[in-house]
Length: 229
Image (cartoon, rainbow, N blue to C red; front, side, top):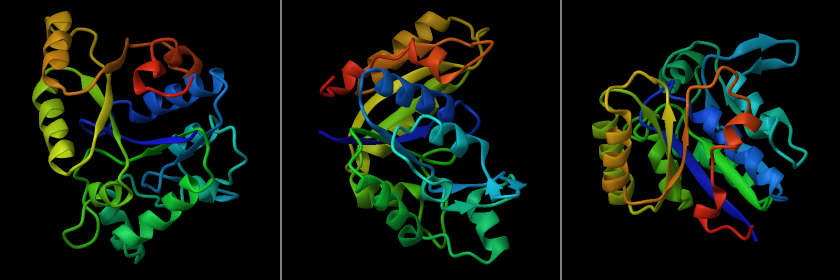
């Protein structure tokens, strides 16, 4: 049995990696083999081993398969800007083919649970008129949506879910990541999201002082993804 999902978010900096790493950790604790990919990342740091991205390293740390960094994150750029702009400055053509091929190689390893994490939201631009969502469409991956819970998140979440479904893909589940615990009427907002998103809520993750994968995993329910756990 193998299952793979694409992880997107309602915006950038809303905890996609935190949730993805938590999901991978939960899968490992359930006895599943795990693999991950973050095909493009900007905001990388130069190290002795080359450019490294903090998010990609977090995902790699939760992979049970022996993967190299460049397999998980094949396209890394230093500037903390939109990936298509960082790629353009580096003279790299960031198109669907450039991202699809390395993701497919990770999928071909057939881990029991594989996550592919995007950059930013659903319509992150690539070269020309392409978007990162086109890569997901080409791979036919079901999607997990991370909702950054704060004022305005209902509109962002519903519009993103509508776009995913309109693109012919399955919204497999969503996670409420409470990035603003002072959000007014928090419970009512979460209830509205549950009413309007066409997928199960995999968990409600509070603002944690130390959001380690193990800590986040305790708030997530993988059984709602209908895996063979």
